[in-house]
Amino acid sequence: MKDNRQLFELILSLKRKCQAREEVIQQDLGISQAEFNGLIVLNDDEKIEGHIFAERMGLSPSRSSRVLSKLNTKTFVHTAFKPEDRRSVSIALTPEGESMRHQIFTRMQECESRICSGLDKCRIDEIKNALIFLEKAL
Image (cartoon, rainbow, N blue to C red; front, side, top):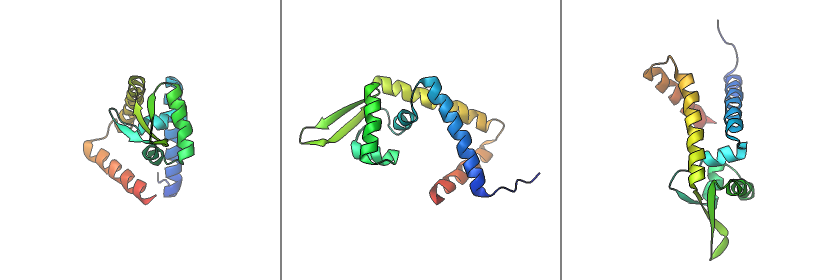
Protein backbone atom coordinates (compact mmCIF):
# COMPACT_ATOMS: atom_id res chain seq x y z
CA MET A 1 0.00 0.00 0.00
CA LYS A 2 1.51 3.28 -1.11
CA ASP A 3 1.35 6.34 1.14
CA ASN A 4 0.45 9.34 -1.02
CA ARG A 5 1.01 12.00 1.60
CA GLN A 6 3.42 14.80 0.86
CA LEU A 7 6.77 14.79 2.66
CA PHE A 8 5.77 17.80 4.75
CA GLU A 9 2.55 16.04 5.83
CA LEU A 10 4.63 13.11 7.05
CA ILE A 11 6.96 15.46 8.91
CA LEU A 12 3.99 17.12 10.64
CA SER A 13 2.52 13.74 11.57
CA LEU A 14 5.86 12.65 13.01
CA LYS A 15 6.14 15.95 14.89
CA ARG A 16 2.71 15.44 16.49
CA LYS A 17 3.62 11.91 17.58
CA CYS A 18 6.94 13.06 19.05
CA GLN A 19 5.21 15.91 20.89
CA ALA A 20 2.73 13.44 22.37
CA ARG A 21 5.64 11.31 23.65
CA GLU A 22 7.34 14.42 25.06
CA GLU A 23 4.14 15.37 26.88
CA VAL A 24 3.96 11.93 28.51
CA ILE A 25 7.57 12.28 29.70
CA GLN A 26 6.89 15.81 30.98
CA GLN A 27 3.76 14.73 32.86
CA ASP A 28 5.46 11.66 34.36
CA LEU A 29 8.38 13.78 35.58
CA GLY A 30 6.23 16.74 36.67
CA ILE A 31 7.95 19.33 34.49
CA SER A 32 6.68 21.83 31.94
CA GLN A 33 7.56 21.87 28.27
CA ALA A 34 9.81 24.89 28.86
CA GLU A 35 11.64 23.12 31.71
CA PHE A 36 12.01 19.98 29.56
CA ASN A 37 13.50 21.98 26.69
CA GLY A 38 15.73 23.99 29.02
CA LEU A 39 17.15 20.88 30.64
CA ILE A 40 17.94 19.10 27.38
CA VAL A 41 19.99 22.02 26.03
CA LEU A 42 22.25 22.07 29.11
CA ASN A 43 25.07 19.60 29.69
CA ASP A 44 26.41 18.14 32.92
CA ASP A 45 29.48 19.91 34.29
CA GLU A 46 28.97 22.82 31.91
CA LYS A 47 28.67 26.51 32.71
CA ILE A 48 27.26 28.66 29.92
CA GLU A 49 26.33 32.29 29.46
CA GLY A 50 22.70 33.35 29.29
CA HIS A 51 22.91 34.37 25.64
CA ILE A 52 24.20 30.87 24.72
CA PHE A 53 21.27 29.33 26.60
CA ALA A 54 18.83 31.58 24.69
CA GLU A 55 20.49 30.64 21.40
CA ARG A 56 20.32 26.91 22.13
CA MET A 57 16.67 27.27 23.12
CA GLY A 58 15.90 29.30 20.01
CA LEU A 59 14.34 31.98 22.19
CA SER A 60 14.76 35.69 22.78
CA PRO A 61 16.79 36.63 25.87
CA SER A 62 13.63 37.73 27.72
CA ARG A 63 11.78 34.46 27.00
CA SER A 64 14.82 32.36 27.91
CA SER A 65 15.07 34.37 31.13
CA ARG A 66 11.57 33.20 32.08
CA VAL A 67 12.58 29.58 31.42
CA LEU A 68 15.68 30.07 33.59
CA SER A 69 13.53 31.50 36.35
CA LYS A 70 11.36 28.34 36.33
CA LEU A 71 14.42 26.08 36.32
CA ASN A 72 15.95 28.11 39.15
CA THR A 73 12.76 27.96 41.22
CA LYS A 74 12.78 24.16 40.97
CA THR A 75 16.52 24.19 41.85
CA PHE A 76 17.46 22.54 38.54
CA VAL A 77 19.97 25.26 37.70
CA HIS A 78 22.25 27.64 39.52
CA THR A 79 22.51 31.11 38.04
CA ALA A 80 25.17 33.64 38.91
CA PHE A 81 25.25 37.24 37.77
CA LYS A 82 28.58 38.77 36.91
CA PRO A 83 29.41 41.67 39.25
CA GLU A 84 30.70 43.80 36.39
CA ASP A 85 27.51 43.30 34.31
CA ARG A 86 24.29 42.37 36.13
CA ARG A 87 22.66 41.60 32.76
CA SER A 88 25.15 38.80 32.10
CA VAL A 89 24.39 35.50 33.81
CA SER A 90 26.15 32.15 33.90
CA ILE A 91 24.10 28.97 34.14
CA ALA A 92 24.97 25.51 35.42
CA LEU A 93 22.93 22.45 36.29
CA THR A 94 22.58 21.60 39.97
CA PRO A 95 22.72 17.96 41.11
CA GLU A 96 18.88 18.00 41.00
CA GLY A 97 19.00 19.34 37.45
CA GLU A 98 21.52 16.71 36.38
CA SER A 99 19.31 14.00 37.88
CA MET A 100 16.21 15.29 36.09
CA ARG A 101 18.14 15.64 32.84
CA HIS A 102 19.31 12.02 33.15
CA GLN A 103 15.72 10.89 33.78
CA ILE A 104 14.61 12.76 30.64
CA PHE A 105 17.33 11.16 28.52
CA THR A 106 16.57 7.71 29.95
CA ARG A 107 12.95 8.16 28.86
CA MET A 108 14.05 9.44 25.45
CA GLN A 109 16.31 6.40 25.06
CA GLU A 110 13.39 4.09 25.91
CA CYS A 111 11.37 5.76 23.14
CA GLU A 112 14.28 5.44 20.71
CA SER A 113 14.58 1.75 21.56
CA ARG A 114 10.92 1.26 20.64
CA ILE A 115 11.50 3.11 17.35
CA CYS A 116 14.57 1.04 16.50
CA SER A 117 13.12 -2.30 17.56
CA GLY A 118 13.51 -4.75 14.70
CA LEU A 119 15.78 -2.47 12.65
CA ASP A 120 19.37 -3.34 11.85
CA LYS A 121 22.21 -0.84 12.30
CA CYS A 122 22.35 -0.04 8.59
CA ARG A 123 18.65 0.91 8.50
CA ILE A 124 18.98 2.97 11.69
CA ASP A 125 21.92 4.85 10.15
CA GLU A 126 19.88 5.51 6.99
CA ILE A 127 17.03 6.95 9.05
CA LYS A 128 19.39 9.11 11.12
CA ASN A 129 21.06 10.45 7.99
CA ALA A 130 17.69 11.25 6.43
CA LEU A 131 16.62 13.09 9.60
CA ILE A 132 19.88 15.04 9.70
CA PHE A 133 19.33 16.01 6.07
CA LEU A 134 15.76 17.17 6.84
CA GLU A 135 16.91 19.11 9.91
CA LYS A 136 19.47 20.98 7.83
CA ALA A 137 17.01 21.56 4.97
CA LEU A 138 14.46 23.11 7.30
